[in-house]
Amino acid sequence: MSITRTTISIDSGLLVTAKQVADERRQTLGQLLTRALQQYIVETTTADAAVTSLPVMIRTSGRGGVRPGININSNAELFEMMDEEDMARWSSQM
Image (tube, rainbow, N blue to C red; front, top):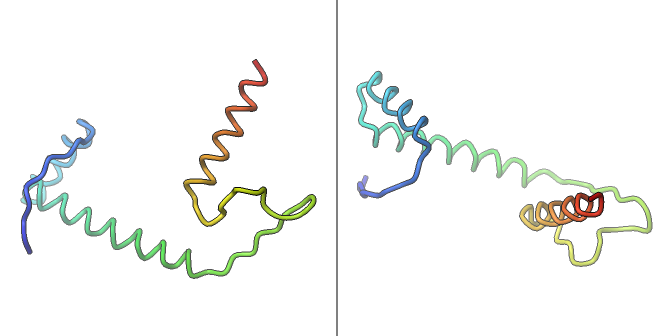
């Protein structure tokens, strides 16, 4: 395994806790973070693969289908659209 030195921004409280855990386990902070990141990647990749492999049926109401321009395959676009709708509702109430 090749080791690369890098700089990251991390919450100061989380850093303090991570250093304490690393000390308790007699590991370096780098070893603790490497293992935690490896575990996170494996778990989320496995979970994502399981979710994406399941067939999904979306029922719509009204005159049928998804609004034009909405890509239901992109979570980012769906969240962006929902945020825009929330902002429009919020500003119309003021």
